[in-house]
Image (cartoon, rainbow, N blue to C red; front, side, top):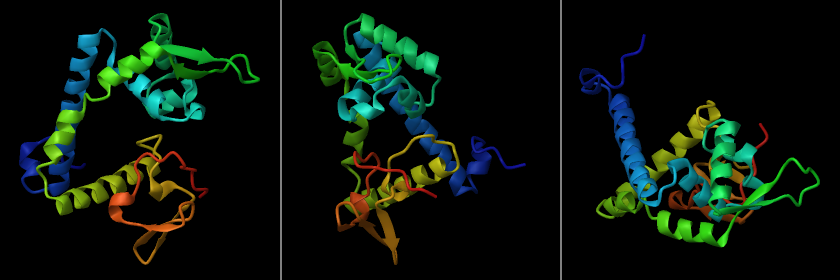
Length: 202
């Protein structure tokens, strides 16, 4: 049986446990900031996340099935959130596909305004990163992007669109290369959420 990562005594001798505990604290900060914004506007945190996601992602990803995978919740949970957003006039449903049962979700003008008032909720986290040396930030980002990829490969994160899992990505002698952009990538240019991402066939 592995030692509990949340036991402070275990953390004293296990760096991985310290890191997991640290990520948990950062997750709490993220949730607090999101809740504060949601409470101020009278909508739920998941509704804010859905609106922000729709604002910046292509229509093919803006449907109930994909959103459920994106946020690791059930389809009924997403459907309830969409129903509420529709009732409040923040979204529009596009039934232009051949399947009348499916639809893509678009922002209404009111939804665009909500996004402009909510998408800065995580700014306090970004602001704190400005005090970290650029080389340390690059090291941190490299570790995080690798960690996200590993979580996806092990089924813990169901959706990710990072370079490492993309069919256009090549790693040759520890250098990163994108076949779509036809260029070598710096560590800092590895993307976490790429618009051109296409899943690599294993």
